[in-house]
Amino acid sequence: MLIDVAAARRIAEEAAQQKLERFLAEPDQPLLRDEFLEGANCWFFFRDPAIVVPPQYALGAECAYAVSKRGAVRTIADFFSDKEKLDSYLKTMSDYFLTHDE
Image 1 (tube, rainbow, N blue to C red):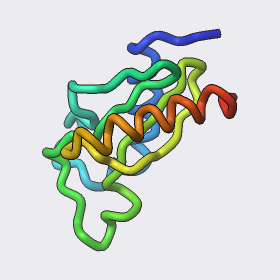
Image 2: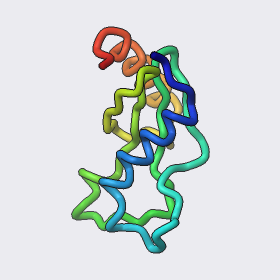
Image 3: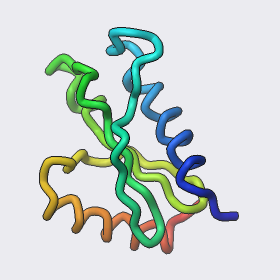
């Protein structure tokens, strides 16, 4: 069954909560940016830049989230500031979910 973008955002928020909860200044602070990208088989959601991640935790927490149209989630590199890399990665992950979707 395919999901919609609202369900995909909830899935990404659950994944982000696990990684980012200890870095939140306020318990109700947004976890994700409002902006997202949609590919043929997935969406990309990005960490809200207001969440400050200490350098020693950057590798595990400064990431984005890919959610497939069937609800599978993967933690991915955050190329939000590099449109060329981001567009290429969206296609790569969309192709990945075409054959590896749970």
